[in-house]
Amino acid sequence: MSKGILVFAYNNTAVDYIAQAAFLAQRAKEYLDLPVSIVTDDVEYANKISKNFDEVIFERSKAITAKSYNNGTMARHKLAFKNDTRPQAYDLSPYDQTLLLDTDYIIADDTLKHCFDGPNTFMAYKDAYDLAGFRDYSEFKRISDTGVDFYWATCVYFTKCSSNKTFFDLLRHIQTHWTHYRQIYRLETPVYRNDHVFSIAIHIMNGFQQGNFAKKPPGRLFYTTDKDILHKLEDDEFTILLENEKFLGQYTLAKFKGQSLHVMNKFSLAEHINV
Amino acid sequence: MYNFIMLAQNNIESDYVLQASLCAMSIKKTMPSSKIALITNDVVPAAYQQFFEHIVPIPWGDSASNSDWKIHNRWKIIHASPFDEAVILDTDMLVLTDISEQCRVMSNYDIFYTDSVLDYRGNIVSNDFYRKNYTKNNLPSLYTAFSYFRKSEFSFKFYELLSQVTENWEDFYKVNGKLLQTHPSMDTTVGLVTNMLDCKESVTAGKRSYNRPTFVHMKANIQGWNRLSEQWRSKVGAYLNRDLDLFIGNYKQQGLFHYTEKDFIKQSFVKQYCDYHGVSYAIQS
Image (cartoon, rainbow over all chains, first blue to last red; front, side, top):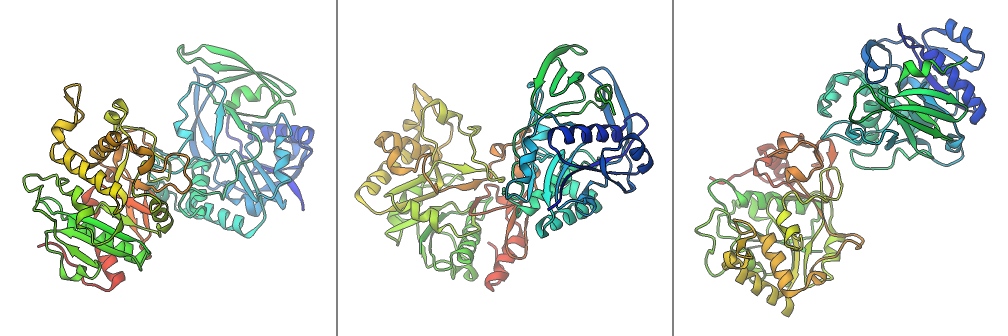
């Protein structure tokens, strides 16, 4: 059974997702000893920037949306965002067992290696832990106030099997009929988001009830938002400036060591990428 | 096989007999060998009478004749019941899947009230939005919408006290000279009687119980929503599919469903159940 990590990376004018993917590939080799394949629309750049990719897979994005990117609490940019190809992960993955990761997931331990050891065929985190502690978590609890449980598409493990084929077909169906689904699931934003599509599909795979189609991956998913700043990254130790609860523009210094971290501030992450 | 019993009294706004008939149709679909009794003084449409093994009048006159909120006859259920034991349901409920296991748990008691309800997403309700007076006054939070009795000395004693409190609720509801609430309710009355007899352990399962009888309770502000609402139907969609599976906010409902808002009963829902049972659709004239 082949095993590996799959990432999707589509650059815009300010964020180099492909460089993030190359950085992830470096660290995946170090901490997980797993190959990383990249899906992108810029094969030439991906091959140029890194020799660490197992496979570079071309797939053109067909839908470009606009997304707000914060860089700490005082700067915001509206940029193009191409996130429509992830539902094709099942067909595009060269592996029998795939760990699907966001490019801004900074691997710093070997916990996710255990995904490949167990009997579970599909895993995704339902809960995640914000290092800041004080922020409103409700948007990550359910996809809307009245809606279904939120699952993170940031880190998803799947094997090639018929139920997962159905799941990914379902993702594409929801994506195709996104306007319909976002209305009946009462999403307040029209923006297409993979977390929401995965959450709806998991709910349906559970028979429209609470269920266990998606098992919990090992360990915990920790994150900092794009209002925080990654100040320093040395091996498995992160130094982070966390948004201050009461004073806009001020931060609280924090250290995080020995565990992987989803770093959503792409601009401060870029300063620590060395590929 | 379990017996079910309901009490229905129509008022100017609500057709409780229709609700009871729909509930009976749902029971006959999911637990077809069940026997159902309806206590009512109202006319039951001929098409729906077949769903009730017994239709019996309210005994000793209508104690709720001067009230639109007709709970004053609820204590008579044990006396009017043609069954020696039965599960009592509110009329605004649907039995969506077989609840035999829950009924079996209840039948281990002489009297049983559930103390645990679910929201439409299947989570146990832990907030006391509608029951702050219970918390404040240490009243057991019991739900009469899904309850049980077996005729016994203890049961009749319990129901005798229920009748006393129901008929003199303004006296019994007074705590330190103030009323617990400004209107009588059966849940509050049962909580008071349970405290008076100090019998909570004997009439409910407690939180440690496996297979604790429960139901989905659709009061709007116990659904785990951040934003409050007067009516749950303004927040989430509801539909029945062809197999009569009920979906609320895209969640498939299981077991016992307490819809609480009378307008939930759409003509199309009743027609679907009528079609399933091969009876003609009829409403109160």
